[in-house]
Image (cartoon, rainbow over all chains, first blue to last red; front, top):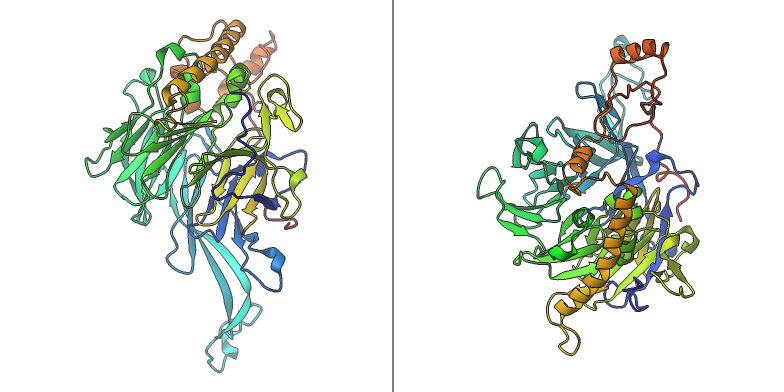
Length: 453
Length: 121
């Protein structure tokens, strides 16, 4: 199974040709730790794109309206708002440093003019409101235009302040802080389809919150053993079903996925469905469990399927079949013969995410060397693309990349030994409707679009 | 390479057979890698991905600093050399007395993200 590229055909459904659109971030060789992007998420309509970084900052980009006078800025994403979401903390009681790194951002469905998102670090979830202000009141009675208080004795008449237009200002304000509910590190948050509740999951527990209530949270899953010596697995990711508000799934470090129904009991320790691919015992090795650990789980938009990412592959599961996945896509199988060094440099523990396109016909996930992979589920083609500054001319087509696992390296192929394992693409996002993707390559955010767009 | 677990093309190998062959081919590299690792670290535990590894994951972020320990250690240093202070990757802090120099600096204030500045392409 040498080579990881499919036939040189583009993947993503309907013969897509991916092109460079934009890149955000500095070109520095020396990347500051704080600038490493740790999460990327499109809003439900796709007009906003949020990123979180290790420095606890959130940057939101907005898609420009199509503009006849500037035809080249065909739906470009530009900065809309940026704010410091989380700050570093130190828990003195437990001697724990709490990183400000944003682990996940999830948008709430839009209900009014303002936009809401949840952002979380290891311990605390915050609800942020992002609102626009384009009017300002003028003609106050008690203060003059500079804001200085007027002498009350000098005020002889009353006037009604009038609203005047002003330059658009986008403000972000924290509306809720959901704290102190997690002993372990939060890895996932997921907004429920009821638009009222959401879940937060850490290594051992999953909590259910109401968006309006911060002083109370319900524990719905608890896998902490009575004796910690007996600990064999941890929760790695969790998500609510997109349509059924009573259903959630969570994945484990042992490569299993449990589906829970909140109607069956208050504490969902007993799963309703248990998804696990049977393992051939003769093929077991020291690495088996580690590489089977699921780093991400995502429901399809349809709600019929879910996708899991483990170290070497992406699997699509039919919710109606627990015994095995319906599809397995190899991401970088050539790494199997490098597991020893990947264990030594800790890369084997990297947590890659995965995502669906809007119609569920294609899936995408990241790899090393700033490569990312796309699999078309209808044509069964896959492609490897690269996020690099060298290929960043506007509307330049992305050329499929190929990795040579062994033997003779063909021209244009990259050999496994020359892959840069520090250039990992862990976070990717696909626009909910269109063929636009956002790929986080360390401290840079790349946006690619389909040529036809 | 992707695989479908159902029978798609009866003319070729069935899905399962194909999977078997591939697993066997994949076996040798993985086992070879395991042998390499055990050769380098013979004391590596019998339970791969078991308790030790998980406990380490749960304890991420734990820093210990005890001013009493620190001062006692400083006093002892006058008499004998302490083992070199390097960050201890093991669970237990053991003999290593953390010093303020070991603990990473608290990050100072807030700079705007570079994603928000700079040219739009």
